[in-house]
Image (cartoon, rainbow, N blue to C red; front, top):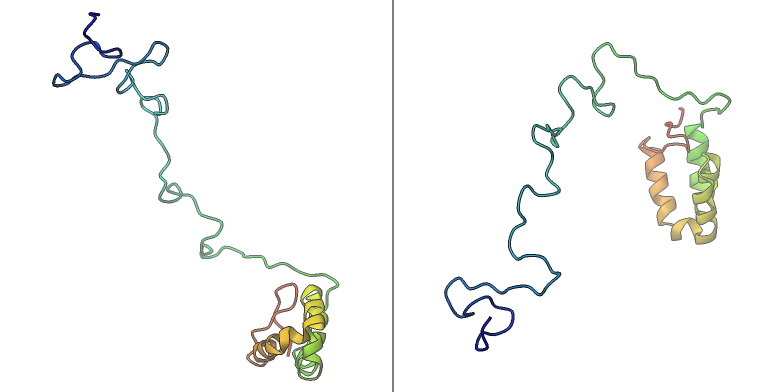
Length: 144
């Protein structure tokens, strides 16, 4: 290296294609030689990211024709009555009585302290019960 040459350059820094030389201990500039360290080995076949393998039935997909689909059975837990839930919601909905009856104890306490979510929650629940879209705490529809 001559006295006129700036430090860090192997040759004239203003010459076309001139690249800086890194300080000692910092490796080289440019792409690493050889294959990338994160690349899969040669011949490795990755699974398709677009879905399950051929022949595999997803447990969340529609049931196969003839397949028996089991529903949970709640032994000892009686089904809740649609009529009782409707009357409780009409008379004591702002206190959450229908929520306690159907097993939604946490929401029942919330309704109790907020006046049925300021009446809006009780009204929504009343509509859900009337249109038969209200469920008990086990996810079962109310019995007529």
